[in-house]
Length: 229
Image: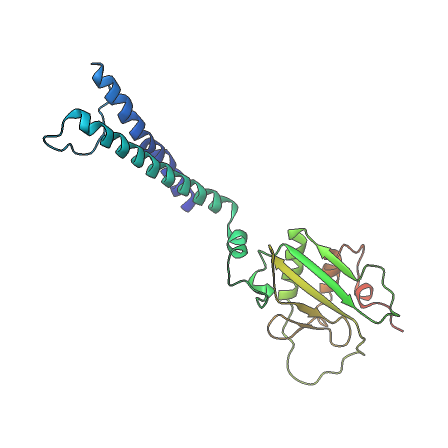
């Protein structure tokens, strides 16, 4: 409805923008005795002759035309924004998006991701220790998967052994980086940096999504956890 209303205003503004030019043409025709379009101008001042009025009227028409064209440009921009979506550009320019912003507050706007693995030197993996993802769709899929993880409940847990392996995920909106996310693929598989601590132990489908985001062919949990020695 909003887009339809904005687009409906464009023809009216075009007519208004042309009013100043139409008035100028009408004035010229009237001076030649061929008036076909009534001239549009502000109220005439009594006692002021035609020669004195002409410059003021022309300036008034130009100003009116500029205002109409400016309104037309603004309405057109709003219509295009409504059609294509403005959330990304708004967040890119939003000063509230800082290094402390949690990715879950900008899932639909993140467009870049750097994943860095920390592990013991003896551990061997089939993929690089640092991977940069610049395809927005894959970056947002990763963000959604993280934010869909359940919050880790309180209590005592008996988790598998924890190894010195972790993944640091840095999301970005344009040039602005968000709060880092730390994913531990061993032990209770906790995730930090999303507000409350979350965990992956009960969400096995998370690891294939993370591996696909990194461009790893046929990723599994064991691929990201690495070899156990």
